[in-house]
Structures are given as structure tokens and as C-alpha cells.
Amino acid sequence: MQDFLYSLITKLNGYLSDYILVFLLLGVGLFYSFRTRFVQLRCFGEGMKKTFGTLSLHGGHHHSGMSSFQALATAIAAQVGTGNIVGASGAILTGGPGAIFWMWLIAFFGMATIYAEASLALQTRVVDQAGNIHGGPVYYITKAFKGKTGQFLAGLFAVAIVLALGFMGCMVQSNSISSNMEAAFGVPSWIVGIVLVAICAVIFLGGVQRLASVTEKIVPVMAALFLLVGAGILIARFRYIPQTFGMIFRYAFQPQAIIGGGFGAALKIAVSQGAKRGLFSNEAGMGSTPHAHAQANVSTPHEQGVVAMVGVFIDTFVVLTLNALIIISTLYTSDGVLASGIIPENINKTNLAQTAFSSVLGGRLGSMFVAVCLLFFAFSTILSWNMFAKINIQWLFKKAGKTAVTVFTVLALAFIFLGTLASNDLVWELADFFNNLMVIPNALALFVLSSLVVHHSKDPLKSLKK
Image (cartoon, rainbow, N blue to C red):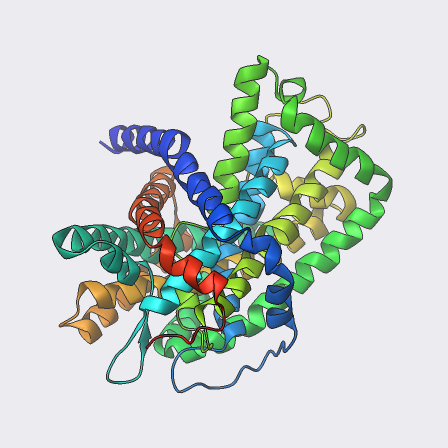
């Protein structure tokens, strides 16, 4: 039964990602790029200034919601996960170094998409009697589609995100943490599980404010650690950097030279791998990060929209790109083990980055560093995903919100612990399947509500309507 279910879900995921979601999400990105007159170019400097101009790791306590940077940090915590390491590795192994070019292109258009998501999340959020802010795709989906259609699409999104991120997604993230910590430091998985659950429980029970306080500190630290060591590796491989960029651009249009096969088939693989991995790395169009941006205490939707674009930039053009450059410059250049395009049996997407880092840092140190990075990446992702799922639990169970949230929290902690003990391919495929389902109602609502987004992109001083 499990083998049949795994085969079925794998086929459905392949169909959704190859023939529906890539075109749907790329279509949304192109649509909003032109509709907003390329807001990702016009307002990129503004976004950087708002993000880093008043940067503080102590955003303080807010009566409700978060500061703009805390909202961004929470969003980045969700975006920058194991996908940045494993996802980029899988794209390069399958589609060749040229897949990175297509990741860059997808991320460029995705910046316009996430601008729209953040803007709509702020325009449609609601504040309950206790002053708590609730916002995300379910709120703008029901604005885009009235009546039963809107309720159905919003319900589909809510159920999908709870299953994809709240349960199975967190399970595979915790599995990444425990397996890497055991391999690098010899810590038994069950001990990692107990510690992880205890820390998560404290943060989950502290609500939005405690989550914001943690993510605003974790995200800069994990980014600085990864960038510092990564930059050191690139300096050590400096003479291979021109060759590295040359391969990215060459194999983007001549992938058959590195992955084999005919030109048409190879190009399709390179483009699809870059598009799929890029889209699901920065999460633009998926509907996850709007939950964080809806919490921002800002004056206008435009203000958080331009900050949200910086999140995609950091995720893809900084973190993911650095990992890709390290992999290509150490393994694919003339002295690398993958220079011929032939992949040894002992190398796969899960250990490719580790192999690349170890080639410069040494086997033991490289393994430890990747394990620490994955600890930061996956842990921060668990925190943000739990919050996103919790918001949708509250929407699904409006009359029994507190009870439903309590039950969900207990179940989520159980899944996190189970993930540290065991994980399998079916869980990964199910997480991807429900992740894929999230995209459809979210993308449809983005198309329908484009006039609201364009209004604020043209008139950013317009006051946020309450």
C-alpha cells in the first residue's frame, strides 16, 4: 500500500510541478512585473534602505504584530531552509550548472510576485478583539472569490498548508537536523529530538512576539555565519570563479554538454530544474510568507512589499547563489570530481554541498559546518512554518480557536520529534504534494486582485485602510 501511494504521489507531484505550477508561478511573476512597471527594479533601493537603514536585532515588544524587520526575518526564516542547500544541489546535479541561471531569472520575477503577496496580506488582514493580527492568503482568497467558491479555495489552501508545513514539512526539517548532527557530532537522534521539541515548545507557547524576538536574532546570525565561511571558500578558489560563472551561463543554453542527451531534452531539464528549485526555495507565489508580512507594523502595503522583495533577493541571490558557486567552483571546475559530468555513486543531492565544503575545509570540519548551518536553517524554518500553519488553524476553527491551536501545537511537536527518529521518501513526497496544492488557490487570487496591488505600487503614500 505504501509503495502504491508513494508511486501515485510522485507521479502527481511530477505532473503538477512540470506542467502546471512552473508555468502558473512564472506567469504570475511576469504578470506582476509588467503590471507594476517592474517594481523589483524601481523600488529595490527603497527596499534595501527600509530593511537595513534602521536594522536592529532588538525590535522590541509590540502590542500586536511585529516590526517590519521582524516580519522580514520571520519570512526569511521560512525561505532559507534546507532547500537552499539540498534544493540547489539537486538542481545542479540534475540540470547542470546552468540551472542556476534559470533560478536567478525565476527569482527576479518572483520578487514582483512576493511584493503582491505582502501588499495583499496587509490590505486584507484583520485584528481580533484581543488585538491579535490575522492575515495571509485565506483572507485575500475570500476577497477575490466570494461565497462558496472563496470558502472552498481558502479551505483548500488552509488544509494544505497545515499538512505541508505544520506537520510533514516540520518532520522532514527535524530529520535533517538530527541526521546531520548525529553524523557530524555523534549526538543520538533521540537526544536531538528531545532538545529540539523542548526549545520549540517554549517558543510556540510564547506566541508571535516570542517568535519575532527569536527570528530577528537567528536570521542575521545564520546568514553571517554561512556568508563568512562561504566567502572564505570562494577566496580559496578565487582563480576558478571566472570559470564558474562561465559554466553557469554556458550550460544554461548548452546543458547537453554537461548532462548529456539531446539539446532539446537537456534544455528542458535545465530550465525545469532551475525553475522548480528556484520557485520553491524563495517561496514567491506559494502563499507561505504573506503570513509573516501581514504582521508588520507599517504605514502602507507598499512599504512592506518592497521589504518582502529583499527576502527573495537574500534567499536566492545571496544564500542559494553562494552555495551554488561553492559547489561549482570546487566540484565542476577542471580539477573537480564532477568536471566530466559523470556523477559518482557516492554523491547525491543530500551530500553534494558537504562534499564541496569538505574539499576546502577538510572532511571533518566541512561536515560539522554543514551540520551547524542546517541546524540554523531548518530550526528557523520550523518556527516560521508552525506560525503560518497556526494562523490557518485559527481560520479553519473559528469557534474553537484556542482549543484547536492547543491540539495542533501538541501534534506539531509530536511530528517534530518523530522526524528526528525516522523519515521516509513518502513523507517528503506528501509534503511536496500539499505544498503544490497551496500554490493553485493563492496564484488564482493574485491574478484576480492585481488592481489592488497596482494601486499601491503607483501610490505608495496611500494610507493603509483599516
